[in-house]
Image 1 (cartoon, helix red, strand yellow):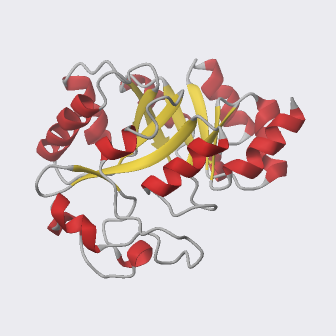
Image 2 (cartoon, helix red, strand yellow):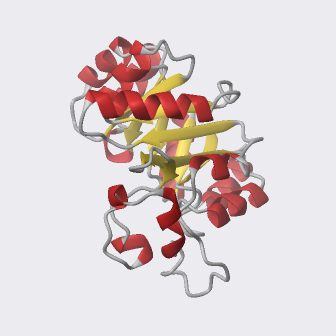
Length: 241
């Protein structure tokens, strides 16, 4: 089981920031998850929300911005002890820090149309070129998966599940050509983990911040544990081995 930092290491550093990615890199962890959206100038940006209110303290819609506008928003504003200003990073800036990671889960946030999905996916694959061995493109949005399938993508794909649709999720993942399911922790029952493994799909579980639960999942043989606290979870995993 690999420890995967959620949005970098959002419980230990500002989420989805270059500083956060450098932090997890310096821990020696080489697996990370983050979110991708596309701006109005088609730049790919790392950000979970579609508004800056929660992370940067300013109510501004992300999709109204171009890459030049990102300088105005400090993603570390809630971290009083964090020394650096953290602007919202672009994907290509992020990849310069995590270039040597073994596992990168790139969550593409939902889009409004098939056209937007195709445009985003085309740019994403160009920027991830050379990382086919380590990158898994994940999404809840079936439009993203269909775009990847239609473009004959060489990248591994993972279906994210937060709705209690049980075995239909496994069938959907297989139909979409996915190699992985990302189960929300509350849905990752022993039964569903076993069924997913029997379908020969890899498993990531998110977001797991409880050490006891992490130990349970380790013994169930999941592939990846996505956590806000990778430092603590790495200690747990090292002691379990």
